[in-house]
Image 1 (spheres, rainbow, N blue to C red):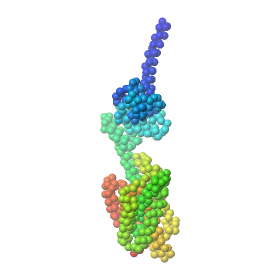
Image 2 (cartoon, rainbow, N blue to C red; image 1 turned 135 degrees about the horizontal axis):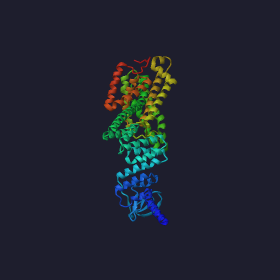
Image 3 (cartoon, rainbow, N blue to C red; image 1 turned 90 degrees about the vertical axis):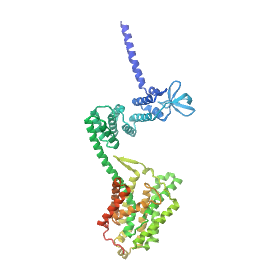
Image 4 (cartoon, rainbow, N blue to C red; image 1 turned 180 degrees about the horizontal axis):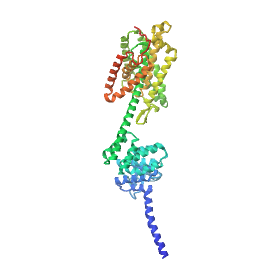
Length: 539
């Protein structure tokens, strides 16, 4: 009897172990990969991909990538699966380890068939696997992928990932991905309502679309109410960030206007000259940047990252020299005759445009962005491009440097003296013609520096300056002729107002509205926001 009992116990244990061993074999990634072999249907391949993702083993990523790339093959003789590369005679690699195992004629092997839905499943699976990566950036990217492609099958995987995650930001993102998966599942209404609250913290357009879909589809009143409240909250948050984005765009445009107008504010304020060729000084600075970059590309490409630093002083010198020649050759004979000055400088602008067309051609020229000015980053729902940010910083640096020149140097003191009372300054021994020449050269040189900045965000063409000359005059008149602080406030104000008007009125009509508002403002304050005190204007 004892022997019989022992035999029965052994049989029972054998019967118990066999299914467990089979189940363990089914969970073995290498065994699951072999399911790709044979003439598996698309549904079978997709099911196998999901089964591999469920193992959570990062080693299966090699096989999944090969499947997506069309490099996963199986032997026609025994359906064994490999990664196969090459033509004719192909090299065969182990799908788990990646080690080369054999070579064979391509006719003896067939590729595992894939389609777009399978590639999407592979992408989701790879996102699941990278949740266990030691690299926080990869885990965050995986969490973002799972949020965007949430399915109900991911809930258990995300539960485990949330439990294991230690980084607070990644954990919060995983919780949001889990909430998105719950919305697409058959979970109870109470759990979906809780998921809506979790998603409300991530108030962006993608989340808004998910919550709106739930509000329209659910039949549970409590869940619908929670979803509708979340929709209102997310819409308010998005509207607030849209305001911030428009303010940023406005400040960005304002910095461009400041760079283009600040030189004009000097020449117009000190000399009373309406310089219609000021936009061409900007254009010369942009073409100097193009010339510098072309020279560096063709001779020392390793210095391309320094191209703007090299172009800045050269652009200043080129534009300042052209401005000095203009002042000494034409403008000094026309002081006190503003209409003739306007016509003369307009003719100079046409000559400069044609000269540039003759030298560089009429088509747009490419000016590249250095690496440190490329790309963008996000602040909340607001996107900030590096080139625009650096232009704002650069505009403020130029503004501060110009203030130092005007307030802390002998030239600045003489310029201010001539601005306030030209005849008295001349009687005190100041050489006003020399001050006029240096002032005009300084204003033109700053316009050239503005051209370096504008080359990073606008087309470099002979007509580049024409797009900014009218706006520059509006900034100077609105802020107060000859007042740098007025130019700063005027540029930033007009930039922000333009960006808020554009969505409703369009770019062209928006500028017309701004022009009308400035005309109305000048009727009340003819000298602008910050009027110069003690200013003397020659008759």
